[in-house]
Each structure stands twice: as C-alpha cells, then as structure tokens.
Length: 347
Image 1 (cartoon, rainbow, N blue to C red):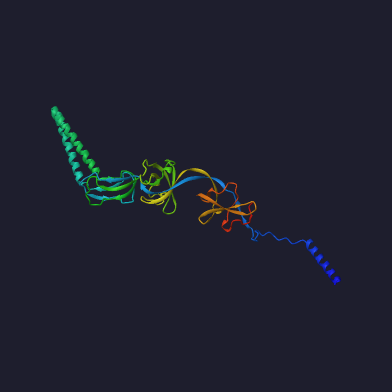
Image 2: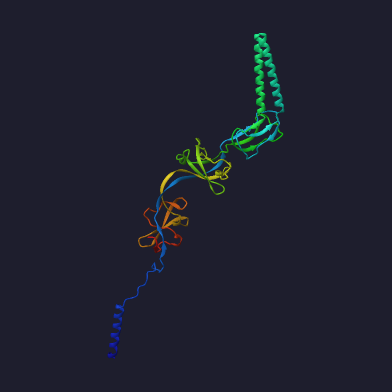
C-alpha cells in the first residue's frame, strides 16, 4: 500500500510546483472594476472672457412727441382731405383744404378799400391840410392791415403739416365745419418712438444717457436702442424710475415692427466684466441644477455642480464651482456618470 501512495504524492507535489512556475495570461484592463469600457472624451479648460454686463427690464413702446393739428379758421367748410392714418408726411405737405370763396371775396374787398384809402391820402397831401393828411394816412394803414388779415385767412384755408412724421389720428371729415382750434389730425413727430422701461434704484446708479439697449421684437428679432434720458422722479408705489430709450422710427426697417403701445422686454448694457466661461456643450442640467464633469488624475471624471451666469452664442459664464486650471469634459456629458473611467483623445 505504501508503494502505491508514494508515487501519487510525488505526482501531486510536482503538479503544484509546475502551477506556480507557469506564467498566467494577462487580462486586458477594460475600464472600471465592473468591467465597464472606458469612454473616449475630449477635454478643454475654462477661459476668461470679457462680457457685457446687462440688466433686463420690461417696458412699453411709446410716442416721443405727438402733435395735435387743428384749424385756425372758423365757419369754413372742409372740402378735401389729403392724408389718412398711417401716412408718412413731410413738413409743409397739404393735409386738408377748406372752402375759400368767402375769404377770397373779403380779400378783394379789403384790397379795394386800400386803393380807396391811398387815393384819399393823395388828395389830402395836395390840399395841404395836415390834419386831413394824418387821418388819411391812418385809413391807409388800417386798409393794409385788413388786406394782410384776409391774406392770412386765405392761407389758413390750406392746412399744412408742421413737421415730418406719421399721421396717428384723423378726426376731420369732408363737409364738416369745424370750430376754431378743433382737432383735425394727430402727428407722430418725425416718426420717433421710444421704449419706456422701469429700473430699480441700484440699477439707475449705473445707467447713463447714451448707453446701448436691445429690445426683443414680436417677430423674434432684436431692436437696437440708446438711452435718451432718465426720469428725475421715482414712482411712489414701485420705487422705480422710468428710463427713456430712443429706438428706430416707426415703420422703418430697424424698428422690426415695433409700434406704440406694445409691451416688450429688453436689456441695457451697463458695463463690462471679465468672467470664466466654458462651452455650452460642457454643461448638463439635472434636477434643476447645472453640472460639469471634471477630469481627475486617475483618469476618472467627477461631476461638479456649478452656478452659471450670462449666455453668449456658444459659451456660458461660470460664476462658481470651477477654476481656470480645471480640465473639463467638453462634449458628450450626457453619457457620463460620476466616477466613470475615461480615455482622453485630445490630451
């Protein structure tokens, strides 16, 4: 029995020794401890960028100045209207015409009276009567004044525009006999409109005339404007003050369809600041918060919550949570989770 067991024991010892000496095949590193493949990523670093500091507000588009155009005549019939609401006009354009037959007749009468008074003056001078001459001279001056008055009334029969602009209202109608001073038209002077927005006390301290503004137009575009003046009065209820911003004239290409009475949103450029920015593609949003993925020294990524600020065409301001020396994942962050092992393709 001992002779049988001895060779078996020696065989087991030899097998054990052989297993310790023989090299084992290498198992490739597939990523994480769970065997998850490493994800290929590109990295970038935040950069410092100078951005405009903006403050947003809501406001109403209003008319810069609206002129009320009325008649200076009385008892004359309106026989022709030359403009309507929305028409763009120039200073001196004819707006309306009144019947002038009566005025013309009175003008002819006044001119005849002047001729008669001048003849009487000549006779008085020839007679040598000083007193009669003075009386005749006074009658001539009176007759001349009557002629000027009738000429003025005749000119008033043609109602003309006092300034360039756009007709915003028309109360006149053909055939009516408006009284003196009656309102016939309303004119947006020079077509100028403005945006009137409210700002807080703190914001007003940084706003100056001449600053640029940008308004959102109804069609989705933007309208450029410029601060004209700041109201000297604060609203007692809201504790805000109005800022008046000039915008392109109504109906022009630059106005982008803005009209008086519209309520629009806009912002003012109140300064500049140098901030840290990252590409938009580096930000992921979860549960209402913003995150980036930072590359660690062990080739893993760490999810970091950041506070964002202004947004430009392709970058986002980072207010906190990141430093300029951090290496961050520049794209594809939606496929990553905290602690993933990665492979950098643009070291």
